[in-house]
Image (cartoon, rainbow, N blue to C red; front, side, top):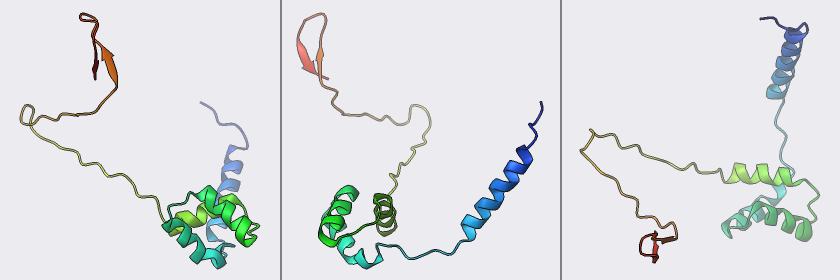
Length: 115
């Protein structure tokens, strides 16, 4: 196995750039002056694209959609779905899913039933 010349230099350059980016002071968002209005829109369950459009139309916001998206994520972080794994001995417990998959045709009787 061989490593191409320049790989180490490229890696070193990438690490320096990453370090500069991480140490850069955080600037206040261009949306900070619209914070209360964005919170109101979020309370109305508006999507980020609609919030962006309303800020542009109603308040003359000239920033980007990605700025709105990042600002909204800071105000209202995405909640992760939680799962609980059930560990039991084999044969001790049974789980049943009562979901609906749609109509199913019984090939023997030719009748349709819910699946």
